[in-house]
Amino acid sequence: MPGCGQRPGSLDGQQDGAGRVLGLVAHVSLIPGGRDGLTLGSWEANMDILVVGGGIGGLTAALALARDGHRVRVLEKAVRFAELGAGLQLAPNATRVLERLGVLGHVLEAGVRPRRLLLRSALAAAELTALDLGEPFTSRYRAPYVVLHRSDLLAILHDACQASGVVLCPRKDVQAVTDDAGAATAECADGTSYQAAAVIAADGLHSGVRRLFTGDQPVCSGFVAYRGTARIDEVTARSELDEVVAWIGPDLHFVQYPLRAGEIYNQVAVFRSQRYAADPGLDDGQWGGPDELDEAFQACCPQVREATGFLWRDRWWPMYDREPLAGWTRGRIALLGDAAHPMLQYLAQGACQAIEDADALARVLAACPGPHLIGKALAEYAQTRAPHAARVQRTARVWGDIWHVSGVGALLRDELFRRRPADDYSYTDWLYAGPRTHAL
Ligand SMILES: Cc1cc2nc3c(=O)[nH]c(=O)nc-3n(C[C@H](O)[C@H](O)[C@H](O)COP(=O)(O)OP(=O)(O)OC[C@H]3O[C@@H](n4cnc5c(N)ncnc54)[C@H](O)[C@@H]3O)c2cc1C
Image (cartoon, rainbow, N blue to C red; front, side, top):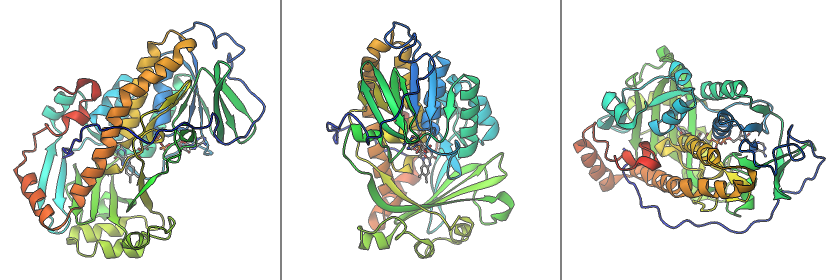
């Protein structure tokens, strides 16, 4: 289990950026009641907020803010609000927030509550260790562990946003974000622009708004992920149907869990590309192809080898993260989710941390007396969240190294894993209990 909790070290990578991302200037179309209306510059606590990016992070933030009475508009580049990929694991640090937002019921209906997180050897198939997700787990963390289809979660958030009055705008490619003259402005490629008391940038790993804060680049791990779903009856070599199973081995792993009331099986295969290792200058698409997938999983046990046949082979995801960033806010502009802290997926926490961000953001803005103090409130949000998110980013890397180790390291790992009881939660408290309640 994710027990390699590092101390939150010093944060780096921050530098002064220009006051504007890209440079497209366009005519201004105000949020109703915007800059020249009643809210900006007034002392009203309910504010106009722009969210850039309508992924899980952006929509959760929009929902949390709208439920507190803020007027929220989401600008999403894509033609519709959608999620790529299939399954998503939501740990209690996220489901607790979803419960507060009133959507956990729908999430539980759409998802599956797994019995255990189980680690198996990808080579020998032997069970290595497990984390029991039953009643003691749920009461300890005051929320359940759920797996569900990404598109189901996005649809739930989308509907809840609409019901809460969030204005959802697809086809809005935000090209520039500025903070001046008492307002934050987002300018879109189609020539429209919007003003608000704050801009929350939830525009993902390749965030353009992040360039205001740092000139850093995504860091390539050299690993690639394949995803896929299969009808449950198609997968004969499946593992336990009510568990999240990760088969781990040298430089690879394979994750399986059921979705949609156990009707479909979600699978993710991850491996280190030898082609990339030999030539890290290669572009994405030039490495990690299906030939490498087949080769990487050749030595695995029959269950894993057979299951790789159910992966989508026309698309694969090179795995990137970034170095932690200390400063997520600048005046009226703040980063959230992968834009702030993209991480490798080994702890299954990227979306969970984005959901935690949304909760923290809503809390500080709820306590903010009005737009004149929003910069202070956003700074407080970053102070609350950045050290913890940095720790998760760093630990995800280490957890991946532990999964992918070979030789003597693997022998020692397996021995330690086997001694761990499934109800030992000492390694997960820091992650699942939430940053405000570490001391369980
Ligand atoms: C293989 C894999 C498995 C994973 N499994 C898990 C898991 O089990 N649990 C978990 O918690 N996390 C998991 N993650 C991580 C998780 O998917 C991400 O951390 C999460 O989706 C990030 O959400 P986000 O909203 O911050 O960013 P994104 O989902 O990237 O959303 C960003 C949005 O911004 C939009 N956008 C971008 N640029 C602009 C622009 N200029 N203008 C307007 N809109 C823009 C994009 O179109 C997109 O809709 C996994 C990741 C991978 C790769």
